[in-house]
Image 1 (cartoon, rainbow, N blue to C red):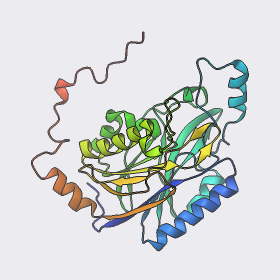
Image 2 (cartoon, rainbow, N blue to C red):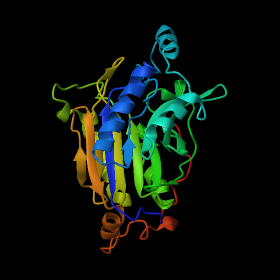
Image 3 (cartoon, one colour):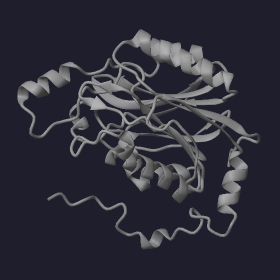
Image 4 (cartoon, rainbow, N blue to C red):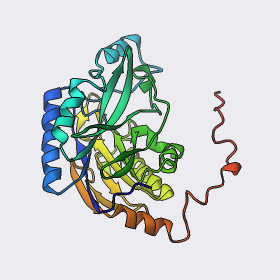
Length: 297
């Protein structure tokens, strides 16, 4: 266990990021300044901060013309050790910052996340679970690993990953006590509602966040895009969730920055020390089908 010995102040953003890279850097700078003003040691930003997300999700029944148009509108692909990531490292200073981007590795693209501070890259991740034709634009990652940072041991996920309890459990078993779950999570495409609080995809987003924190007894930090991009409208709902599933701070359905000061060791110790320590009380020998390959119809 590498829990930071002192309480950690965490900020998490619901913010709008598009194709304009300079505007993206300006938004990151503004959120960094505000988080520092609040005394934060960790700032978690959304998926696809540098260059924006996909303008639409599709595949399957889309026309070839629509597919080609979508593929031509992909975000810029950036190398992990390239100058674009280095620029955020230079901005970060003493703050630990998690953010999303499109990673280039040779001719391959990944929907990726990285955690940095002024010393460099602390951890990186390539999205494993791909929804609604995202596999037509990105290759999938193939692993979950926790990593040590100045504010404790962390893990990362991207968007649809939160729908898979095995993914969060992998990170918790690897010692992650803070998981940054970054998203470009939109409203429902059907059965739309005027009040975003009632949107069924927004409600799923919140349920997943609280469940993943509770079942692993960890701190869960969920960032999300705000506003609109292409045909997508994002639900905001950035939040910090405690190990009992309680929302410690959140933005609701508005853009903004949610902040909470968290004694990670005390909160996790209280959650796991009351007789119900979920990681300890697992029975892996019973879960025989968990890692079997799915049978596709």
